[in-house]
Amino acid sequence: MKISALLKILADNCLILLGFFACLLITTSPAMALRELDPNAGVVEVLQMPVTKDQTNCWRMAEEKVWEPWLEQQGGYQGRELLWDRDRQQAVVLIGWLSQSEWDAIPADSIKKTEQRFDGVLQRCLGSGASKPLPLQRTGSLQPIP
Image (cartoon, rainbow, N blue to C red; front, side, top):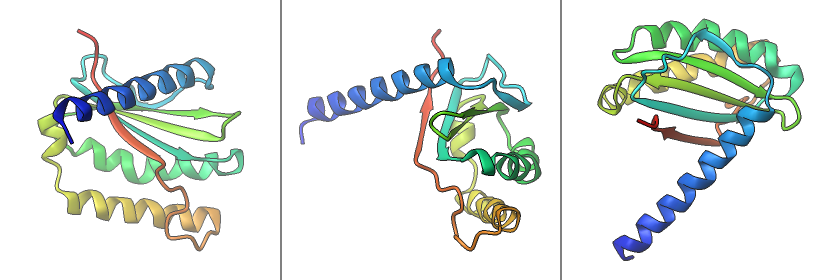
């Protein structure tokens, strides 16, 4: 595949993602910030997952109990916001990082263990036997506009 074709595909997907999140931010209920996202973050991690109205309390509790303390220990962490779209039954998590390199420096094993703890808390709260009660649908990152 030619590099120019690959770059066009990446640019098209980036525009679609940016448009999606702009619409999502306009139509969602207010964000819940456990530690407010720092506007000076160098990169924002974006995670999207299905969360029904009946799952929101368990999701928020699991985020607060598992991910928040873990994130607070990570170098470069700049806060986050939890967003929920009532109509689409979708959740979006925005996590600010000081830089891409600090985000990339987090060991994959540490992320995996934390994700397993998060899933376990969700399973118990939701009474679900699913190994991934709220599977990620999309992941990505956004850069602030200078």
